[in-house]
Amino acid sequence: MTTISRWVCILIVLVLGVIVILGLVFGLKKNKGTTNKGTTRNLKEIVVERCLMFIKEVDTSDNKCDQIWSTFKHAFIGKNPCNVKMGDYDQFIDTVHQYISRNKTLFWSKTQQIAHDFTKATKCFMTLEDTLVGYMMDGLTWCGQNSSMEFDYTYCPGYKECENNPVSSFWKRASMNFAESAQGRVAVMLNGSMSQPFSTSSIFGSIEVNHFNSSIISHVNIISVISSTYSGPCNSMSIRNLTSILKNKRINSTCKAITVSEIQNCTSKHNPQSCDCVINGEL
Ligand code: N1C
Image (cartoon, rainbow, N blue to C red; front, side, top):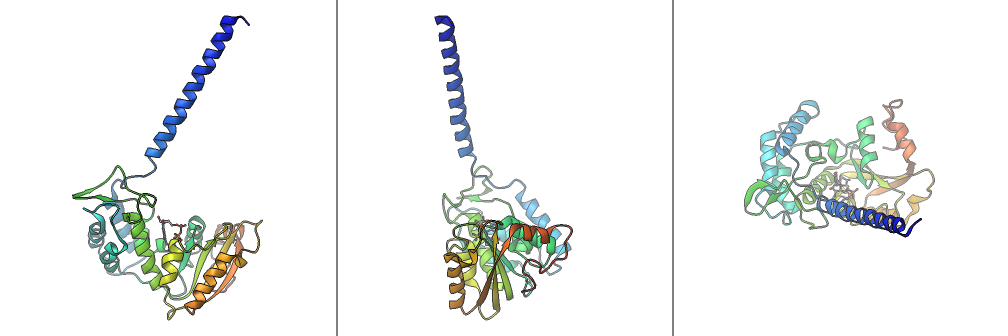
């Protein structure tokens, strides 16, 4: 190779290197800027349509979707999106009328997908998203702006930016109400593959458990969802911590480790009616 062609090769490698580095830098910057979504487009239409559909198919009680929408909007519109508190949704929660059947409540923490696949397939339990409040807002983002009656469609703060953001405060307030309404034997699906399946900083650990009403809840069935290779998670410190918190509230509990494939088997089309296959008839 001549000296000139060697220099041409070096130059090409350098130019390619610079292009790759610039691509990475701009790519990362772009991702960083788009981490937080703004308000979901057509929020009102989506929420009202979901409300009407839910009332038609699941719940025939006297809910008024227009009224529900206005109390929901009132909770955060015109407010600094870092200063919307749980209490701002009080009126909204009071406007939605729903009855949660005894022995049917399912809580979850870090098991969102599998818990919802399970309730959808078996219809034996209800998560918050299977009630009108959770169904309407599931997967949506919303926030307002200080001194404006408009939604912010470009950016809504997440939990990392500020705790009192409209979406986090909504789920906390809705979860509090859901936990207060739970009656009889209830269940919770925890992620037994994590080092801390029960965390006192999760919504389940910091809000729902604290609002369990021991005069109407008789038993908590803790389901530790595990991958087939992991064993012994019911004995983990964090689950023992949950058991003792419940005991102090005078609520009995039992824990059972169940593999992902056992749950999937219950939710598969071949086994659609398996109401208690996951809990083996304990509920
Ligand atoms: O913090 P988590 O779980 O323990 O919250 C889950 C717990 C469930 O039992 C639900 O009843 O709290 C309720 N809940 C929801 O139903 C819900 N839907 C969507 C709490 N949070 C919910 N989200 C979003 O997931 C919300 O943005 C919140 O911050 C996460 C919490 O999920 P997690 O940490 O797995």
